[in-house]
Length: 476
Image 1 (cartoon, rainbow, N blue to C red):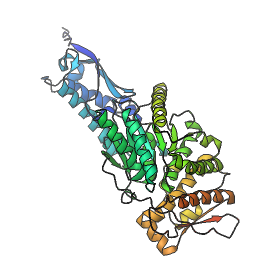
Image 2 (image 1 turned 30 degrees about the vertical axis):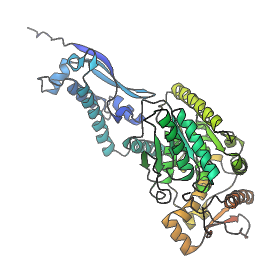
Image 3 (image 1 turned 90 degrees about the vertical axis):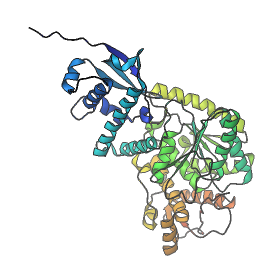
Image 4 (image 1 turned 90 degrees about the horizontal axis):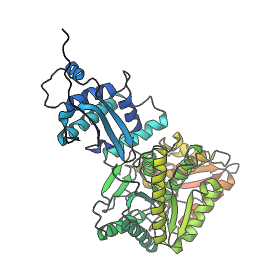
């Protein structure tokens, strides 16, 4: 006689996360959907059913699976984070179709630990090299709690120098104030000057609006943190392994960029993002960039714009918008830009919290170790593709910063003299003109004399310019 099958009550439901596991990488989602032997779907389905059957007297996995043969659980990506869709799940785990809170916590703990075990067993060599690094950055940011998946695009990255005059510093505070009145969060390199000003202004505005969850994110790296110590307003400090990962984290995490006046470090950051966005795969990506400062800084931005146009061309120049002396207008434009970014992320089916769609070539990701040999070998010619030239210009400026701020670079300069930077004459003239203007305007150092750090060598020429030094951008 056939044994009568017992029909158990089941529920279909959508379950939202109970923890930071609301945010998964695309690779993790693929693994959880993969039903093959190398995927995680079967394991997660088995463990999830066990959790949802909490309190059951059944202690045999096969028997439990036979009781709910049609049970399934799928990870779905949403703009504000993932959800779990369960079908034919044990009804005992739900009250009025809502999952019991303790079971929800256990379910996402299982998800967390299954993925962690897979991470420790694999270094993602199956991914393309550039995506390996992008995933590593994602995991580091998630570990630091940088993702708030319940929020729409709302993070503005502010770049600028430490060695800025009071008028410019006050302007950055005013920008931050107008952004803060709109509930916008701030992300900077976490130091003083143009790093501190926007956060300070936003903090005051957040307090006026009774906005208690304002974010002041500071991204730094070990080699620079001593020279750019975190200011006291930073409430989320994240240390990335190197400058390249730090720069990528800025543009993956942020939604809009504001560039204030600065020195070599600021120019390095701008070249990085312009080089990335100049790639053909990124031409439709919404990452608005605003150049802004008080009226007195208009000449500074004219120099920056001339350098961009001369080196990277009109395509890169069209990626930026200059707005001078109008903090209220900048804040309004930024707020409008965030709406465009939100719309674009929805259309692209990309997450709000991490810009997966950005394509970043290895030359922008691979750590560049500046020394006399690597600096001398840099190819600087307008015959190079725009992205490659931008990457090499960024490396040259990074080397100059290293020679003045980071201990290995300082020691190398002391022992062997200034780095030599070689390139085509017109390009080197443009770089010399830009750096000379920074020196003339006092954007290299707050006080003190300069020591030689670099010298420019024009290709096919033996003469060099008078050595010019880029000093660290120190605290106001």
